[in-house]
Amino acid sequence: MKRAPGAGKRIINFVVKWQRTAAALIRRRRCFLKREKENDMYYSADIGVFGGSGLYELGDEYRRVDADTPYGKPSEAVSLLEVNGKKVAFMPRHGKGHIYSPAEVNYRANVDAMAQLGVKAVISANCVGSLREDYKPGDFVVTDQYINMTAGRKDTFYESPKVEHLSSAEPYDERLRQYALEEGARMGHTMRDGGTTVVINGPRFSTKAESKFFATIGGDLVNMTQYPEAYLCQEKNLPVVNIALVTDYDAGLKDNPDIPPVTNEMVMKVLTENTEKMKALIFRMIERIGRK
Image (tube, rainbow, N blue to C red; front, side):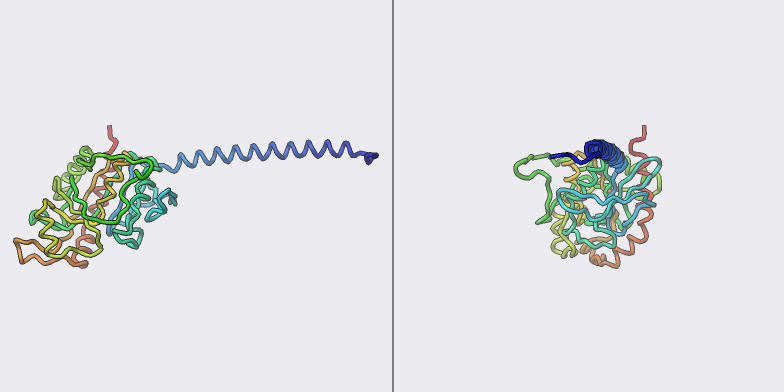
């Protein structure tokens, strides 16, 4: 069979053109991979902050990262902001607008997102009810222990077939605790060194009988979110500190009938009065962490 005149030349031109196109696609792919790698480096942070009730933003963000984790979606996209030259990752654990109850928060996804961003320390802010008359509304407590009374929460990353048993004897980082106490004192806040938090499921507040029981077993405070957040940070080797704002006296104090049980209105009043103080303390903590 005779080949049409000029067919050989056309075939050669086609092959050359195809090779050039393929080479261009390979170069473009390499550039994309390079940019993708640079972006992964860009999406990083030095310090992670979990905001509690009333603390739904920390400052002017320069980027929002929709983190994807093996445990599902976190409560909210991570806000990246710069504070005193440090990159900070902020997430409101209840979501913006407080759309997740304490038992509905995806704690594993939240902590895993922080770990993916490479944070070296975590500041956990929340509000608590007091079981002690000397721990008053408006005080800040840098807690050191918790008693878990929750149920049904996914509280470990170590599931079959990789199962490990870690100590949680000291759940909070002592160095970070001291930073919080010292910076809060310099700001003139009433800082309480240590406290055992009884963590309940919520969202309801305690009965009087429960509140009395919690005090009897050694509780100083009542909260709905410190567990499993703090422990999951431990599993990811993230040093964590909890700064708790006392907003109320839970169901009232057993030895003082004049103190009324907590209401949501009480909590919101104290939160409104102290949210900016909490933010300022967090900023001081961020500045302090990693200082040489």
